[in-house]
Length: 183
Image (cartoon, rainbow, N blue to C red):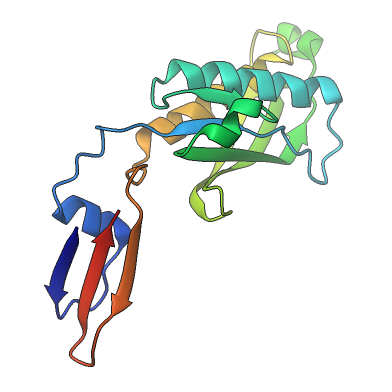
């Protein structure tokens, strides 16, 4: 299908999809969750695994994705509409369950991560900095659950491009007529 548009100063893929009447809820992406990168932060492997497992669980609950796959899943190679979630820890403050139990003003466990949803080619579709913490009662690992829930919420509330539509743009002549091809 080819759509000719005359004299647009700029045309984004999102505008092209919405102007062509494509319903963004019709098709769903599949998601592969990469292992959590600790970055420059000294983070216990148990926390990295807990973040990863919590992300898998919380993202599955959103119903935003056709399927949620683990890093290295053999089935991911066969999925055409695949996004990859990359998570890098930016900050970590170790907390104390004992101090939280005794006082409500200290002992919080805090995590900050940068989450990126990328296409297979590495193009970043969505990037967010998300926090998770435990301030009052609960184990330190509860911060990983809260973080994963916040990442899932940020992704669920974001608008993503239509998965099965790839748009390409090219300028035809000096009159700035643009041809948008939706495949």
